[in-house]
Image (tube, rainbow, N blue to C red; front, side):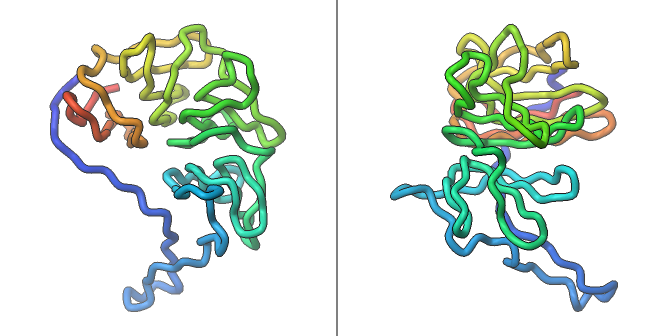
Length: 211
């Protein structure tokens, strides 16, 4: 249920916060994890999503190289260096989360040529695969997990909507969003009682939604 609309500007900065000890004077931001050779061919690389999975840090976005490693829009930091994640995807990842012991990525990409492997995919630690949802989400701008369900902000038949998937059934939350949301990544933040949604769009405003 849409509770309240509010204007917001979202930004994600890929940095790491390091606590050396309990003293407040020793708190500092560190660029330890920043790839020294982070790029997307001749284009502009972007790192827009972070999560942890099985104890490692995963960074995703729009890039195909991290240090000397060739990747596909996502890379894994194992505490020593950046690693490839099964070849990644072909395209751009906007958002990542963990769900059902897998890493879930949403964006504008392909894993294979199969229609079920477009824009939403899971990494089980060994391989990438599509998510078996009949109503195919496209341009998945945000994903989040809460109480055994996967939530996504995506386009369904050309309409931007928030949807809940419990592993079997897809359920839409509220009405679709008017206007033309941009292809910028979306922030979906789950809490015990609410799902917070924020995006940068035209004709629509970010909103606070009950789950």
